[in-house]
Image (cartoon, rainbow, N blue to C red; front, side, top):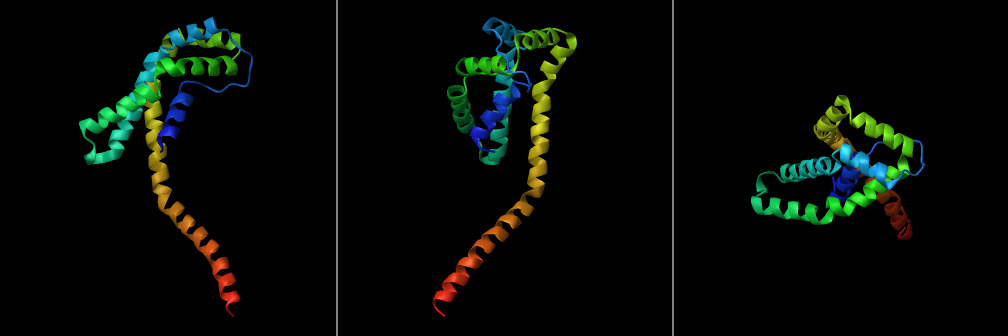
Length: 164
């Protein structure tokens, strides 16, 4: 998965979809971010992505490479830089009432458990998805090869016809 897609997935991770698009106040969203421990959750998510990068690099990965990747994420996806956009996404997606209800939920023991377990769950889901897609990769490669062959065939026929 390219880095840009990972960042998009990471940003999507911090929110849930809703059908109501009324603007919530900055203070209400800020309260939700605090209760959700969003900065901490975001840092955990960055570490998960970093771990995935290092595992994908395999035995060639060394501490210098890990440092470069970590610095890249610290510069390219810093919480302080993304927080305003994430807050706006919440404010644009949820109404004031819904933000307050989310805040109330995340203040409960179950809400806190969801927050605690969510990064681990997201990582497991991502690993399951990657494993599932990897199993199908040969099938995709075959279909790509067939499509390429089909594209070449009509062109070859046109070229052959010119010389007949």
